[in-house]
Every structure is written in structure tokens, then in C-alpha cells.
Length: 268
Length: 344
Figure (cartoon, each protein chain N blue to C red):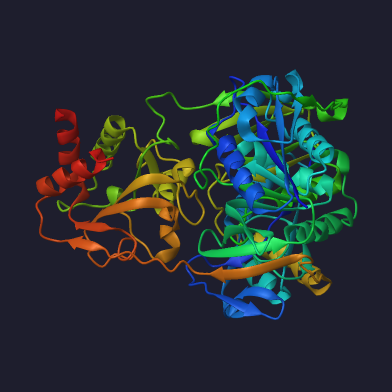
């Protein structure tokens, strides 16, 4: 059965960058935000790779990647991501800050999905990361799903299996390193992915060439979106100040260190 | 005048879990500091009377419940209707819920239905100038924000371990049952079970006192020029078995497993702490062979006492972030630790 898979994903600052909050006229922001190198959000990346893998297994399937961010940043990230797996980009020109209001982002994403030409909602799977590395709230996808009328939703997904009858078996992360196993009658459904089980695909220049034919026009016609953040006020945004006085133990024998550690573990 | 609704689901035995009682504790404190506010509790489960009795002394103005076999399962399509119905029945302006996997799955969708706004992974909620303000972290626990909202209802999911649990005496409570019809379209999903490693293989223990973090150094070449992954496995599992601590890992170590290099067989992405992993809460943390800069160390942002074993005295993972850094070979130290633990 062919699927129409829409993957929602944001771009985030490279996790290795030092991040510092500043106050901007529109609310909190990151210092030198536009200068920070961006990457595809890690969980959105897992969702995209899982989508591509599913599409490959089901001929006739198609993957769209819907992303909101400043156009220049999106273009920078697409230069890398477009070489990984085949997809068609649906770009929204807006902020990618973690301080934006999730419900407003969800509205923009849902609107963009609803305007995808030829989208078969009966065979629709909406994928995304279960959280982002920016806001990290894990709420946007559910609100996108509600706006699209999807009531079969799963979060923290690590595995999706399509069974012979078209039903879906889904493993979601729950507490204590366990997975909840569910079966869903079939599409449409929404899955917020955790890490899944696929490694990052290697770069494929041919895929990149194919993708870039649609990426550049998608970026050019990206709909601009302004997010008001209505009713939301930040009293403070700060880096944790606490720095511990680390006692560095250099010349102690391993046996003595072990004794000290065991005593420390045993102490209430 | 705020109406504060505490939402909770029952556990398998019909009682309320620790996270739910902590949320109730936080809600009572908030309610006491917001003049004229009303506290309401909404329960979801197969049967909610026992849970209501458990919190009979909480002082809730109303105890609402959505009950039935179809609400036993942690399933989005039924839970979203239950949360929506409770939110409306309570006419809630603030909704507090524990950040369990069940609630995290459904709260945002229910908020959308209620026309409200939501904040999750909150580490605190308190009144400031007579208005509630939520504390939560952004950019994967790298910066902390305090925020408030004017929209209502305002739904907040509270992380476990951030508030004192309600501990009142049980009693006989009167529950107002809220009827929720479940259309066929909301019954397409069935929860069929739980997949979990056997007790011996389980390495993630959220309630453990100690978090043991293993870094990629365990798989690298040692002083003899050889890697000793098999011995590393034995040492780590031996330690976990004796201390019943929880196992965390750095991203670099679990990524090796994902790339097909089965370096430590028991390690998976579920163990990963930090930027793209979890940020567990434990009383103590012991990091071994972990390297990296600030972004990687957020995994133990919420660990109270921290010690590290590392060969590099200048390691950014530990400097300024751990209480004690032992500059030593983790293999030698942990081997001896296991011996001492076994002898006691």
C-alpha cells in the first residue's frame, strides 16, 4: 500500500555551539542567532529517515518534508539533508526559535500540510520528532494532528511495523526503559518519533541532485509567517549559574578511590 | 479567580502514582498562594473511586472522574476525549498534570481542543505578583526560563521529582462521574502490551538512587593497546546488578551501537542522557569515561551529588560540574568497586 508521508521538522542550532539568551524586541532570543550554524533537529531527522525507509518499502509512496525557519537557514540545512533521502520540501519562512509559541507553529504547519496538492488523507502518515532540541516541549505534533483531524497519535515512537492487512504496530517509549505496544487499524495516523532504529543514511549525490530541483523553488515560494506569541510573557531566561567546586583527585590509588566511592554510594 | 484542575490517571492497581501525588502537592501550594482560587481534581481510569479515596483529604472542591474499561489503556484517542471532558466539566483555567508518558502523549492535543495553551516539562509553578508563573528549560536543559500566560486554560505538565508529594490520609470521597462517549473512530487503536527487558536485563531504573553514566571511553583502546569491550560489559553489568543503579550513556557510545558496532550489547538509545537523550533525576551520579563539552553534560543537570572517573584532569564533563573528579583508570577502579560491593 502506498503512503503519503508528511514529516514535520525544525532546524536547531548545532548542539556543539555555545548558546546564550538575549532579550530582543520580540522576546527572548539567542545571541547571534542568525550566525549560529544550524542542523536538522535530531528527532526530526530520525522521523525523516524512518519515513524514507517506509516509502522505499512501499512503492508509490511519497515523502514531503515540512519545515519552518528563516529561508537562509533552511537552505543551509537542506544542502546537507537533501543528500540523505528523497523528499519534497514544503518550506515556511518564519522563526525557528525555541521561544516561539508552539500552538502558532502548529497552526502554520497544519496550514502548510493542508495545501499540499494531491495529498491523500486516507493514506496519510504524519511524522515528526516527539520533541525538539529547541523548545523541547513535545506538543507541536499533537496540535498539528488535532488540526488535521488525526485521533490516532503516538509519541516517543521507536518502531513502526506495517502488517499484511495494512494495520500498524507501533512501539512507543514509556517509563523505565520500556515500550508500549499498540496496533492501529491503519492510516491516517500521526507518529512523533524518538530515535527509531535506523542509522543516518550516507550522503547520496544523486538523491541530492533530485531533491534540489524541488528544494530551491520551495524555498523561493516559502510563505512568510509571523508568530505573535500572544499572551506569552517571559519574566526571565538565564543560563544556569551554578558552578561546582570540583575536588580533583589525582594521585590516589585505584583501590583507595574504589573504597571512597563505595562509602559514598552506601551513604544515605 | 483561577480554577485549578489537577489531572491524573490511575495506575494498574487503581491507585495514584508518585508523579500524580507530587502534582497534587504542587497544585495545593499554588492554590494556597492564589487568593480565591479553587482546587478541582479530575481522574481517569477503569475505576477511580479508590484513587479518589486516596486523596480525600486534599481539600479539592470537586472530584471529577472519567471511568470505564475503555479508559484503562493509555491511548491518545480515548484519553484526549477524557481530558477534554474533564477540562470542560471543571471549567478549568489552569490544568496541572504529571509529566507521565500517558499525559505527555495527550495533553497538547486536549489543549488544542480546549482552546488553551500548554507548557510541558515544567520544573516548577508558583505565584508571582498574584499570578502563576512556570519554570521550564529550553534548548535541552541549557537555559532556564520563567514565563506566564494570559490565555486560559493554561495546561502545565509538571516533571516528577520537583514537588513534595501530597501525603494526606485516605478517606471516603464523593466522585462526580463525567460521561464520555467513545465513537468508533476513536477505537481504531488498541494497546496490546508492554515490551520490557527482563528484570536482570533492565538497566533503566528511574527510581534508583544512583545514575551510572558510561562514556565511549569504555570501548576505546586501553593501556595495553587493545579494546576490552567484553570486560567493560562485565564490569558495568556487575556494578548495576549489585547497586541496582540506573544506567545512562553518552550519545557517542549509543551511536556506536546504532551503527552496527555492538560494543556494549545492553546499551541502546533509551539509555542516552544529555542533549538528545533524557535528563533523569537521581540523588547521586557517577560518570565514567565520559568526555565532552557543556552541551553533552546536561544529562546530569538534575543529579544532586556527582562524581566522575576520568583519565583527563581537565575534562570539561567534570570540571565545575562534578563534586569530585577521580583522575584514574575506570576499569581498575570499577573492578575494585565491584569486589568491595560483593564482599559486603
